[in-house]
Image (cartoon, rainbow, N blue to C red; front, side):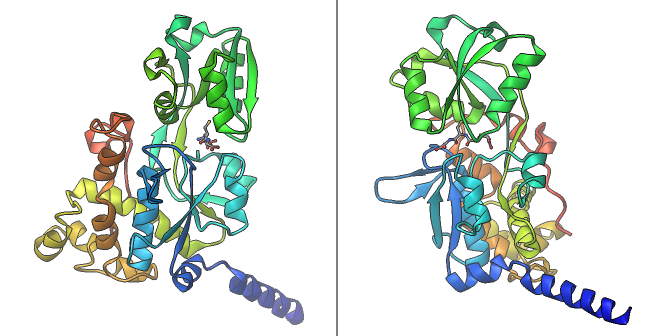
Amino acid sequence: MKRLLAAAALLIGLAGSLQAATPDDVKARGQLSCGVNPNLPGFSAKAEDGTWSGFDVDFCRAIAAAVLGDPAKVSYVPLNAQERFEALQSGKVDVLTRNTTWTMERETKLPLRFAGISYHDGQGFIVKKLLGVTSALQLSGAAICFQTGTTSEANVEDFFREKEMTFVPVRFEKLDDLIKAFDEGKCDTFTTDVSFLYAVRLRLANPDDAVVLPDVISKEPLGPAIRQGDEQWFNIVRWTLFALVNAEELGVTAAGADELKAKSKNAAVRRLLGAEGSLGPDMGLDAEWAVRAIKATGNYGEIFDRNLGPETPLAIARGINALWNAGGLLYAPSLQ
Ligand SMILES: N[C@@H](CCC(=O)N[C@@H](CS)C(=O)NCC(=O)O)C(=O)O
């Protein structure tokens, strides 16, 4: 009996020592490897000079600022829909920050964990205005284009089955082929996350000829994913996201963070900015982790406005991505 217990203890110890330690790997490498969408302007896109920008890219920058002290220390790995999970599982990327929906199956069948929700999305349809369709309920019999390896396929099947409507699936592995097919009229509609449809519209030959229908047929909570069994890394990614959301709620901006750190009397602001408490050190970082992240990218609202807001080509309204106390769904747990 004693020997069995000793063997079990040894196994538990071994499992513990085999536990992944992504924060150490990232620090040793001096660079964060971030899996992003290859080309989704507003969320992640590469400029001609090689720099990446976008809403998802900013979360990579914030994590790098928190962990490595420099938002530029990121290696961006463009991943299409098919490649993304394997890239995370194999260790090619430390975090997947790429319009990826948090689903039960992805956390139970794949060894992944979603650290939170950075953007509440839903699946919609884009059609050419010529079609004269104003609702998804008028799409019975339509040829529908979608990309394989995404949640879009199952959602569209569920929706049409429930509404007792038929459709002709037109599947694509590569996004460029899909957009071309839709543009050339080889399908009546293209279905995916609504945020993506806004971006796709701008890539069509004549964006004004296409319209995104008002129907939203699914929940697509998008957020950063990491590998399972990496608890400290999970805390860092999750709380960097929550820090940016809390910063918006607390009125902490990129420009004002230093001054608030020195002067604020609000306890949550002081803990967020490391003026008191030990939130950073408790997860293996220093006291300045969140100040650096906020100064690198701004708070959640600043990130949203800069990349997706009314002044940008995408012009997406905050809608359900507003803070909980402004009528939206964004709710970050407390900094205590
Ligand atoms: N949020 C959905 C869809 C995400 C997704 O991969 N969307 C496609 C567009 S339909 C995409 O980003 N494709 C870009 C590519 O594969 O290069 C999911 O997680 O499955």
